Structures are given as structure tokens and as C-alpha cells.
Length: 106
Image (cartoon, rainbow, N blue to C red; front, side, top):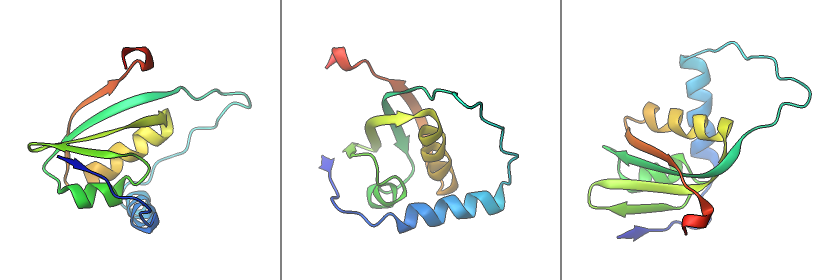
């Protein structure tokens, strides 16, 4: 089963990020002027969360639901990946696997 939600409002994800900052304050590390972020295609496998909740929590990634596993796929920078994983954890989802996929594997 493929669940696709087009044109999601980013407000729920922004609210989740704000709640995370309030609940778990972190000291921001200073970035170097030319610090390059590593980006690439990722696949995140998640359980214990409803697909429509996950689609609103991480609207930047397309969602596929297979049995009881939800799969998010897309290109992310390291910071965006960490943000998506934090949102999933805050909502009670369980990340069972994160793969960095090779675009040549198709």
C-alpha cells in the first residue's frame, strides 16, 4: 500500500520541532564557515506510528506503507535527517532502520 499525501501543511512539523527544542534544549555547535553538509538519498523504516501522523510529521518525504512498516524515502542533508528522526521519536514512532541508498542501485 502506498500512501501519498500531496500539499501537506508544514505547520505540524514546525510545531513538533518547536516542542522538541523546548523539551530537549541543546547547545548549538558553531559551524565552520565552509562546513559542507553531507546529503544523499535516505530510506527510513518506521513502526508504531500511524501513516497519516507520520506524513504530517515529515511532510518533506514521500511515504510508503508496507504491512506495519512505514518507509520514508528522499534526499536529505544530515541535519534534516536528524530532525526527521527526532520528530518520529517525539511522536512515539520506532525507527527500525535507516539506509543511505545509492542512486545507481535504482
